[in-house]
Amino acid sequence: MIPHPLPRSYGRRKARKLRDQSQRAYDDVLPLVELNPEALFPSQKVWLEIGFGGGEHMLAQLDQNPDISMIGCEPFLNGVAKFLTHLSPKDYGRVRVWHEDVRILLEKIPDGYFERAFILFPDPWPKKRHHFRRLISKPFMDELLPKLKSGARLYVASDDAPYVEQIQDVLYHHPVLTLLDGPPSPDPSTWGPRPEGWPPTRYEQKALKAGKVCAYMVFQRK
Ligand SMILES: C[S@@+](CC[C@H](N)C(=O)[O-])C[C@H]1O[C@@H](n2cnc3c(N)ncnc32)[C@H](O)[C@@H]1O
Image 1 (cartoon, rainbow, N blue to C red):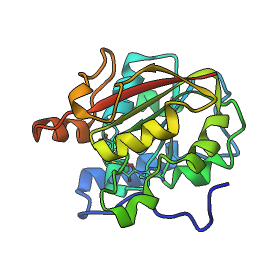
Image 2: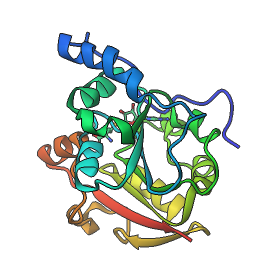
Image 3: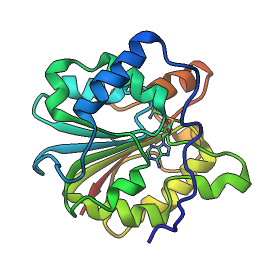
């Protein structure tokens, strides 16, 4: 069980005031694509992105995979507005946005629902006294993994070596997961480039520009 109240795992819910275009997208488009957990997509090819930021990865996946539906979770208003500004009306029917903490949503999702899940560059919370805020932890995985179909894939990336160590501790030998791809250790010198076909994200691009390397991991639910 995830503890209640939930420790906050995200930073700000809102940054600067939205520009007119983003405010319009937020006001006009969000009501069309906001997730109602009582009216989920039929569970066939539904992919989940947790913490989609500005949505670059989700937009690319929608573009590359015309037969899937996606649910994106993001509490950060400026990120949601940015995503909605770029979302094509032709995709409104196959996208749902959960503008809240994913952990509140998971309680409402049937087991075996998602075919893929992405957790790309979760907030690293580098200070030791903030480690309890890190999203990828055993209790969180106990909530998320049952929601994945058997054979579903889980994609995780991070540029923060101490967090990669925690992620590897939680996931590499998890009894319901098989590691398909990922670096052998939390030492950045063992990390390779982003796998082909894996769209970039804004956070990742900033990290690479700052000279960092990133760890990319793919798991399969048994
Ligand atoms: C470091 S940013 C990375 C954003 C994006 N994935 C990227 O790579 O550009 C992490 C994101 O996860 C979101 N986040 C953190 N905790 C979350 C939670 N419990 N549920 C949903 N999103 C969360 C934050 O709001 C933030 O936008």
